[in-house]
Image (cartoon, rainbow, N blue to C red; front, side):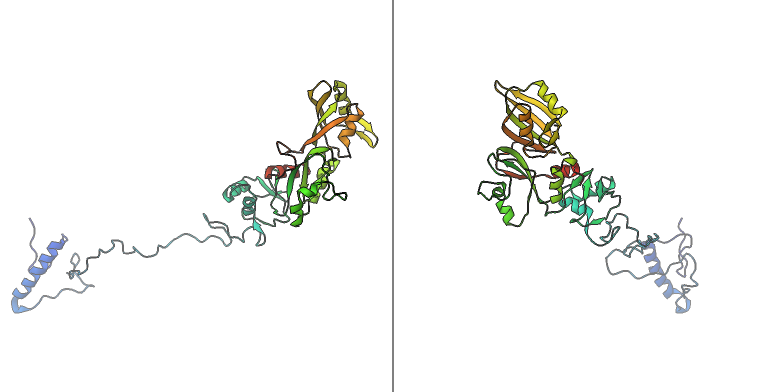
Length: 346
């Protein structure tokens, strides 16, 4: 059974009136005021001395916009986290451009991406896995900056060419052409095949020479140090040739060439020798050596009694001639260039 409100309008202390009850209380309070003796209005205590459990009637709100239940909603949230030490990178954020290795140069992952190694994100993963080295030191921290014109960058031990000015070309020199950039007698030469590049200002070196009657792979580059090391016998960069020789080659020739023979300008020994095919009066042989003396292959085979009728160079180091047509030029890919630099220690 509900207890009735007091005559003075004070609601029940043990129960909070609902909205409808409050409205009823307001109505009954108004009637009770007019009916009280003497016509005096009852006085309610101030907020500081208000009876516990009572609530001052409020006027009805005229707007329909709902009020947030949480009084702090819409206000900026306050974080109690402690500030990071000065200079520490923010978690989940990229390192600033000035981090780790100074302000000069280009970020390493950007250089690798521009060189065609991989995307920047993958290059960053390579750095984290300690697969990248700069100037002989493994990079272990993100944010390193380098000078692309002077830095030596390697990925998995293979050099990455990051300087756009360096040129590395493979030429299939035709038979009858001179291995020079300019021939005073007006004979066809390698310079004729790269005339446009020379006219544009490129200075190219041919790696070694092939005599006019020898055809095949000839490397061209504007890196003088690379060209020098590829030609110098102390770096032992192997060159592979296919030769048509007169007569049938016997096993004794194989053993003699691998043991070494003495020519007019000193002893020489091949790195490998094998018979590819044999015919009635000629033999196709494969010969590998790192010597670069003049007409070395022709003189070797003539010394053992098998003069050369046709000679083609098919490989220099890890670069193959493949099915490249005579007189054509192609740019070496990143793997080929990196392998050449690795072979000569650059």
